[in-house]
Structures are given as structure tokens and as C-alpha cells.
Length: 122
Length: 122
Length: 122
Length: 122
Image (cartoon, rainbow over all chains, first blue to last red; front, side, top):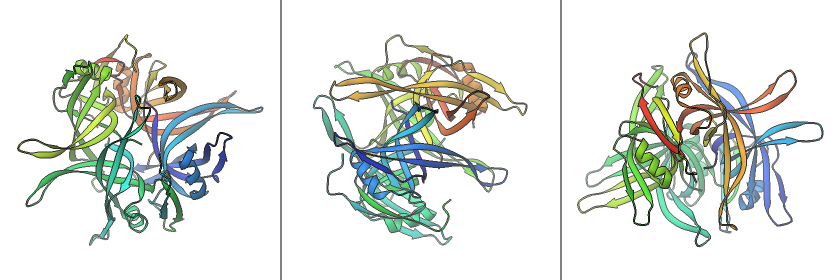
């Protein structure tokens, strides 16, 4: 079983789109997900911490995300989790990546117009 | 714990939008979700059965869905499941409803332009 | 993408275990999932409706469920949804099935002792 | 909406159980989740990377996990994700925590006996 996650959040960086020499389209962006919690004492929702993710989309989903999603948009993402340790020359850290299975603009936050692509999806 | 579901599918009916006398916006539509499965013998994806749901969105999400989603669109939905038995004068049956927590157009299948609403979301 | 669901509930029937002539172990039971909701006016959790599912487990998971799960147990289930219309001679209806990817006793409700099987799992 | 995750994995450390001075039971352990993927060329499942999480359970779930779960067990977990940056005197890093909503032994991997607690669960 894969580690499956579903979340909503704010697109915090402009999506970066590349096509590999093998022709694979890859698009990725940083996603900030603010955790709200209902405080029973105060009887209202309070802001909590922010979770940061790197969301990656491949193939047709990647191409469409590159032309549809902008920094500042609100999105809904579902996919598989990949936790990676990385090391550069000066620093090291851990990144939490999501291999997206589907991405859409979160209509809780705004309106969208959609154009179905003529090319069949997977 | 709620029964939590995440799925993608085809919007099979025009979204129906009402506002109750208390001012609550409610939008609902039928969603057809085609189950594909990878056949290891044939080495390719095959079509399976179709799951049918009634998706319901409330408040601001309901208002935005009414003005953004059309029959024929592909969407991504996450929410809570509610299974209900119903009886009319002549028939009875079971419907599977999803109280949507978030809905977005599935960018696997097309492109979208998004306009953030100025009113704060919940 | 499959329709993916995660839920907790009460095992409402004794698990029924069969092995097909091809040697495939299949175990299924009915699951009742009570939907609770937090009432902000009253400041407490209230009981809501009950969702009914048929949970099915295959292969090794099916064998272990047959020897581990009893009517009255509380379980946690994750899997894929399959909605089916059925007709018998006198009645027809709709059943909501879950093809389980994993099942475990819900430790919110009790204690469990676990014995790892020596046979490797899938 | 919370960031909701469901996953299975190996309990990699003995659960650590504390009770705060306010009487809150908290149990936590490290979980290793091996990501397998189906290789279509080779026609079989291959091992992938391992995701590491810190799983935390509170109240009654925490108490039952402390008396039921051991290092080496296989479990199924669903809950909310919390990503935290931490700094000690000599090092800093990022931890991925899961606030468990439900935990159970993964019956794909073994058998379990369950004893329902007489105290009502939340």
C-alpha cells in the first residue's frame, strides 16, 4: 500500500516545468497548507502551524498544471507521499514530496473555468 | 472519525443550485467514477465498473461550484460519505452521497483558469 | 485513480470465509459506521446516521481476517469503493463494497495482541 | 481541511508512553513505511524508498497503543499530518508527525486477538 494523502493549500511558488530528454513532462511547486483547528473553548476556528510540501505532477497532468496553476492559487491535491533526505554542499534537510495523482483548483476559494483537453487522459 | 473518501470522476448532470430560506447555499450533481484496473496479463489498463455518487457542496463552495462546474467536466472531490436509503411513492433505493470538503477540476483532463474570490473562505 | 476510502466502524456480522476452486481466499463482513458530528451549539458530539458497507478481503489478508475478526469488534479499514446494483428474484438494491487494502482492530476501542505471520505478506 | 494521510508500515521503535500532569495520555513511536511499486517491464513489485514518520496517539487510543503495539509489529494508521522543523544544540531537521485518528495492527501481515474496552470510546 502506498502512503496516500489528500490536502488543500496555497501554491507558494510559480510552478516549474521541465521536459526530460526522454520527453517526460514534470511540473513541481511548493505548497503551504495551513492547519486550522476548532477550539471548543472559544467556539471558533483558529490558525495552526503551516505544513510545507513539494508537489510534483508528471505527463499530461504536469503539462496542464504548468499552464493552469499560478503562485497564489488555492489547490486540492491527492497523491503518494515521498520523504527524502537531501544534502547539498553546505546544508542538509528533509523534504516531503507528493507525487500527485490529481490536482484541481480548490473551489472553496474561488471560481474556475475548465477546458477539457481533446487528448485522452490516462 | 468520519468516513473519508477521495475520488475523481465525470460530472454527469448539470449542478443544481438552491438557497434555503435560511440563506444556506447548496449545490449538488451526480458524479460517475470509472474504475480502471491494471491487468498484469495483458499489461495494460482496462475499464471496470462505474461508481455513481451524489456530490453536495454547501456555502461558499456550493456557490462557486454552481458557477464553475458544468456537465461533462472532470473533477476531483474529497469529503465525507453518507449512505441513505430513500423511498418515493413507487420506488426505493440507496444513494451514496458525498458531503464535499473540497472540489476542483481534475487537471489530468484539461486546463483551467482560476479567479480567487475576495471573500475569505472558511 | 481509484475511489479511496478510509473508515472505522463496528463489525456487524460474523466474517464469512470461502476459498474458491482456484485457491483464492475471500473473507467478507458487514460494517456499520456511525457518523458523529460536533454540535457547536451544544458543544458536544452527537450521533448521526449509520453508513453500512460490505467489506471484502482477499488472499492472506482474507485468511487473517477470518481468524482474527469477530462480530462486535471495532475495526479500521482502508480500500477501494465499488458500488453495485443487485437484483434477486424479489428485490433489487444497491450495495457499497470496499475492497480492503488493509484492515486492523481500532485501538481507540480496545486492546489487541498481534502475532506476525512467518509467511511474507504481499 | 486537514492534511489527511492513511498508511501502513513497520513499528520501528518501542512505543513511548507518558501521562502529562494534566492527565493526558500520549504514546508515540517511529514508523517505517516501505514504498513498493509495480514495475511493468519486469512484471513484479519492487522495493522503493522508505518513508519515516513519528506517530502520536492521545487519550484512550494512546493508552491502548501503549499496551498493544510492540516494536516489529505491522500497523495501519490514519490521521493528520504535522510537519515540524526542530533544532537541538548540535543539529536541526524536519520531522513528519502523524496525529493518529485510528491505529490498528495490519492483518495483511499477521493475526490478532482483540478485547473491547468497557470504557466507551470517543
